[in-house]
Amino acid sequence: MKNLIFIIALLIAIPGFAQNPDMPTDFLTKEFHKDRRTKLREKLPTNSVAVFFANAVRNRSNDVDYVYHQDPDFFYLTGYKEPDAVLFIFKDKQTAANKTQYDEIIFVQPRNVQAEMWTGRRLGDAGVKTQLGLEQAFNNKEFKKYNVDFSKFDEILFFDFQNDVRDDPSDSSDLYSMIEQFKVKVNYPSKEKGLTLAREPEKNNLNTKDLEAIMGDLRGFKTKEELDMIRKAVSISCMGQREVMKAMKPGMSEREIQGIHEFVFKKYQAEDLGYPSIVGAGHNGCILHYIDNYKPNITSKELILMDLGAEFHGYTADITRTIPISGKFSPEQKQIYELVLKAQEEGMKVCKPGATFGDLTMATRVVINKGLKELGIIKNENDDHKYYPHGCCHHIGLDVHDRGPYDKLQESMVITIEPGIYIPDNAACDKRWWGIAVRIEDDYLITKDGYEHLSTAAPRKVEDIEALMKQPSALDDFVLPELKTKN
View 1 (cartoon, rainbow, N blue to C red):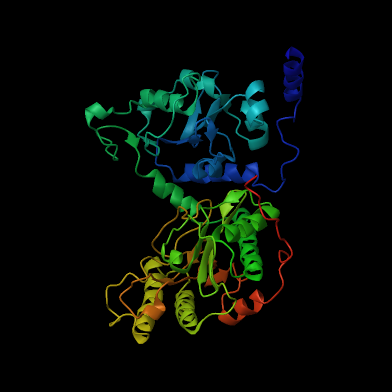
View 2 (view 1 turned 45 degrees about the horizontal axis):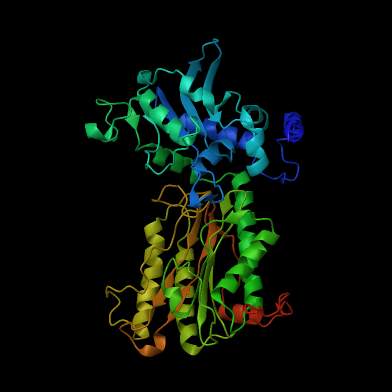
């Protein structure tokens, strides 16, 4: 056993061993992340510091944790993907004890032979310096001794704590411990004092309100490097929709259809999902964020609403298509579908710099209300109904509902347009409309004088969907043997 530990330690000590040779090479560069930190520093108020904590490890059950996913702001600024870390971005240069100057510092989890054997490679402070370009990188065990006079800053900006981080009693430098140490360092008010952390400089210099808008002003506008990632995520997600259209047949389950999408994502090396997959057949499509995906046997009379997004190198797509299980829309399904499509296209007509998110939603809502009245589903275009209960647009990027300004559209934003109509069983309309749920969602880059439609590879028009569904699928001959569950 001692020899095994020695060999592992020796391998890890070899320069470059922590740099997983099996990893892709097309991640965002350290220069990208450095530029983002510079842009943030430019936006910070005078004499301030911004503080970011890595995401916590989340427990699934017993001794099994969820797959770790870094906090998007933390990743955006550093490229670091591990837990138990904290980052400081200073507006002005600080002077260390050895008289060197710095304007950013990060504390990260240390290298650990035993831990890396079980849960994977770690960068450690040396790896963060060489691979991520953060020169002031330290072992997180040093954070407790990090002495900066935080009272000298006019503002300390951070996101307030949700008290949802577990404590590992065996580790005095885990995320929980660093948060507690930070609270002491900045004189974070205790609950007993009854203080809020609104921006009230006369009471304290803790600002938990303004960092969201500052980060939104950064993340809401995508760089060329980010657009490369988003385009890849969108292309992968479109391919998932296309392959499912070809593979779809009555009798499939929602879970099986979800699996085909996600298999395609993995086949194209997407690391994750941008959000839980929504695959709702028939009336299940009326549940906006339906993620059970349990229905075992979908009939030929139903539509299926599929809202899925691949996450590629941290960036997600968000695409929804609604298709007929049989391969052909019924007359009622076609009427509702084409009404939603018309609404989306009206939204696209006003999609350009200067328009507001509200303008796009209103453009789609006017079309849907008029159409629902003409179909006799509502009595008046001004009726208050729940057949279209959501807005039509949001930013996408590192989050599926990404940070960004939600007033006027501006060049380099990436947004969705996603009108929908949902008519549940027992709705107050003719029974022939019951169980019809349609959402069409696409991703758009706002350009100088309009938009670029990023997700055109996934068919949207009725005739194009029906034509693609007639094509053979690579999965047509993929038939698994029946399971034998009894002796």
